[in-house]
Amino acid sequence: MLYAIRELKDKLKRFTIFCDHQSVVSEANKHSEDNPGMNPFLREMRKELAESNSIITLRWFESNTAHTLLNEYLIHERKN
Image (cartoon, rainbow, N blue to C red; front, side, top):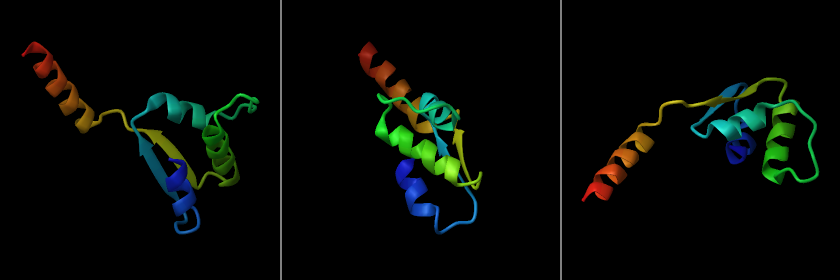
């Protein structure tokens, strides 16, 4: 997500990044104080989002077809 933010922020006026990792999206969207032990990528994402004046939006992509298919495959493989 940080890569997308860095690559797109100067090219697009407004954009939304969808991610299927709910906890990362939730943490990145928090407007809380950074702590010293915070992941540096998360810290940078929060900084970029704060400085973007809401032109960059992160959203959780709830349904990921690829994950569904992978899970079905793994369940099938475990049975065999």
